[in-house]
Structure formats: C-alpha cells, structure tokens
Image (cartoon, rainbow, N blue to C red; front, side, top):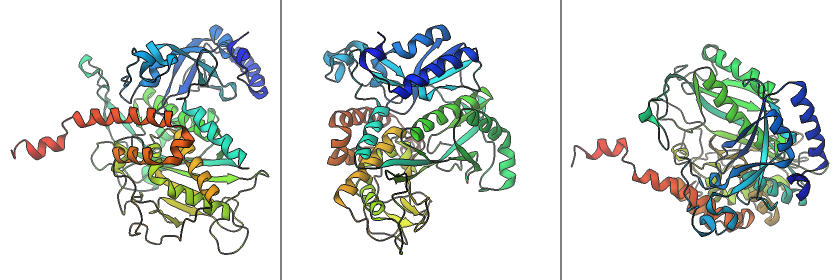
Length: 477
C-alpha cells in the first residue's frame, strides 16, 4: 500500500483529482513536477521529480529533511537538530531525520513560465502518518474546521502591494554568497509619486503583461493590476475565495511573481520597506467575511443603520481584542514594523472605522450589500498567509463566543485613545506570548516554536552594526 493509502490521507475528491493529474501529465507531456510545501515563513520549498517518478510519488510521498522546519529567514538552523529531540523534544525531529510531503492533487498546476513543468502543493507528515505539528497549512485548516463547527466558512480577498525593479547587477561573485547572500543591485521602473496615473501604468505595462498572462494561466483569480503610490510599486487584487484557496493562492502568487520577473531580468520583492531612496512601504490588505451554512454573507446587516450584523460586530470585536497578539503573524519581519506610523495610510493602533483607510480595521458595505466585509490593513506582504488567516479566524471566533463589542467607529483613528500596535517584532512576540487565546488555539508548542525562530532573527539583527549607528557615533565619540 502507498503512504496515502496506508494512513487514509486523501479525501474522495483528492483521489479523483489524482487520476486527472496523471492524465494531464501524460497529455501535456510534462517532464518534471515540483512538489512544494509552504514552510514556517510561507516560503515554498520542495523537490523536483522527473515525470516518471512524480506519478508514483503522488501517493508514495516525497521525503524532505526535517531541518527545513528549524530554519530562520537566513536559512540557518536555529534549533540544535543533532541534540536529543532535535531541540524540539521530539524523536521525529532529531538528527535531521526525514518527513514526508504528501501532494494535495486538487492544487496541481502547469507552470506557464517553466517549460514542461507541473507543480503541486503538499502537506507534511512524519513517517508514522501523523501530521507535522509545525506545518502551517495544516494549522490554518484546523482553524477552518473550528469555524465550521460554529456554522461558518471563511471568505478572504487579497489586495497585495509589492515592488518590481530592473536588475543591474545580480551580485553573483563568490564573495557575495552567504547566509543571507548579497541582494542584487537594482534600478527603478518608474519614479514616484504618481498614484494610479495612466502614464506610470503604461511605463510598467510590459512587466504587468508578463505577470498577467502567466498568473491567469495558473488559474489565479486576478482582478486588477495597479500602479501604486511609490516608485516601482505595484498592487494586484484578487477575487475573494473560501477556505484554504486564498492562502494557497497567496503563496503561489508570490513565488510566481518572483520567478517570472527574475527570468526576464527583473527583481520582485514582497519585503515591506526596501532600503531604496523615496520608497513607499508595501502592505497586504486582507478583506474578510464569514458565510453562513446557506452561503449568505453573515456580516451583512439585515436592515437599519448598523455597519455590520451582530455576528460581524462580534467578529470585529475579537479582531480588536487580539490585534496586538496577532501582529506577529500579520507582520512577522523586523522590517514590517517600519510601516506602522500615523497619518501614513497604514495603521498604528488597534481601532476600527467605517470606510476609513487610516484605521487598522476598515468596515465596508452595509444593509443589503452582499459584499459587506472587514478589511484588515495591518498585514505586510511577506506574512505567511496560513498563520495570518488562522489568527484572524481564531480571534474572530473568540469575539463570537464572548459577543465582544468593538465600540463605536473612530472618525479620527490616528487620534483615538486606544492601544497602539506593537512598535517592533520583539514587542509583537511578547504580545503573542501573553495572548492566552492564541496560545490555546495554535497550541503552545507551535507558538513557542514560532517565537524561538523569530527571536533568533532578532538576535542576529541586534549583532549587526547599522549605517545609522556608524553615522551617529563614529565621528562623535
């Protein structure tokens, strides 16, 4: 029996999808298939198999070293993987032992930019068939199951800002290697600032066309392509989806954009605030709502002057109550906290408002509007979507359970007397550690694991001498 059959890992839908994948690989004469999984940072990792090996591997699984789960953003292992329990207190994680990638055949795609190449998203299991507890796609699926028990499904729409630059020097000399290596030198595609101007859009149109064609060929629900406020800054938006799909689409979108651009001499980055003169921070605005068991929008108020239904208001109350604790998931990099500042179209405190872009939570819609939703403007585009979405679901569920009141809309969100958002990743991790609800929902084991990895990044950052320090103190003292 295959690994999938032995442990009963697929649904009937997945078995049917696997049969279709086999036919598509043969009909399209694919030569290789990439088996990918989203790691703890939301970065796709995996192995590429030739087609003849990929077919049995769909059910047999693909082995990967468990050290991948121990790495920070520099690809350094920050757990003692060769110590007893691998630093995790788990025999399965000791010594760099393997775990198994199991394909989800419903996610199979043919990559338009990579000749004769298929791609499939995978879930992570140990050799005994138990799910890897640090696999973030599964953590999000668990939150969706909890939400389903309450009678709802989660709908999310993506609005993602990012930068694309022209590569002028790839910095591939031997001395440029490292952990991390030297980033490429780049030049702008457009000067700032001309928000949504036709002229600037036409300047970036050749790059937009490269991306648009391949993203649509992937089946991603692309809606709009926009020139953003800053130099060389783009914004793409996507039609809303339900369940796992929007998170899967986000990790594929980011990876696709970076690959397509690099093949054509461009560098795409979802880093929040690159160190480039006059640059604007990039955000990820998450539009979210709940659907009831009849598929109706549970946030839409039936009548009256309310902005949200009772369900929507309680969910909103939960998002506010856990805004500080969830910040480490919505903004998981040191760089992302450069964006939180007043009067900047980015939030700086946990507040909501009716159609106000200065608020963290912007409520849109109203009575009779089936698109009624909450837009969370707190996230950075580098966030792991599975963790970001799961934090929203769990916070909202707590709001529903306790019928939390979000209070009145803030007309002047940058002046409201409420808690500020964390000012740094270090502070955000303290807030996450102190949030009993999120610890219970994600599991203390995972929260401790996540905090350990992020603290390792902060420790490396604190050892670096920055340009600011050198300029401030070198001549003065």
